[in-house]
Image: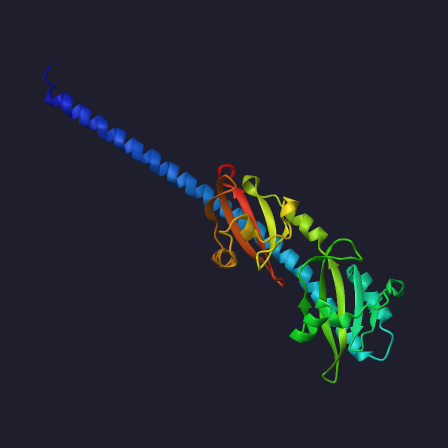
Length: 267
């Protein structure tokens, strides 16, 4: 049976309507996906900015406290520093506060912690502050005395421009690493605390702590981390067997970064 002109026109019209509907559905899906992605990015950025500002200020306050301690010891260089070490120890809840001199003496806030034969001048915190001629913060390490993960904040003590020693404090970062693990991120996400070098400080899988994240995935190079931190944008990639959204932020007043990993399907 031959189709009439009317039938052909009707079919063409229906096909046009169908194509328009398909286009509208596709466009709507695209808009929804992009809207969801933008919403996730805003949420992650706001959370990251708040968290980084709070923890960065926490570190900054303690760095300033050690600077203040060094200035105080400089003004009272001929006095026993124990009371000044104790004051800052209690005020800022440091794990340990101490002073090492250029003569090799080592004094702590608690004299009972004296260790015979301990020469501060060969320790990384002392050498770091001396070589940088200013504030120095060690990489995280396990404290033999405190039995927990710490950083040492150190500042040279000078009198008349001459180095007399180094004031320092051990700061436990277990609460910081715990707060990273407890972050509530969209998409069942999680945070990873890293040194700028890529060494993992805190990961949900504790077995990865201390490893370089490039060992976990070679795409996570130091240049990639820096690029992502500078971009302030989410990046999508397949990671750990699924499509993920990744976001990197620097932690102010530290040499650390935060890497956020979000499951795209759940975001």
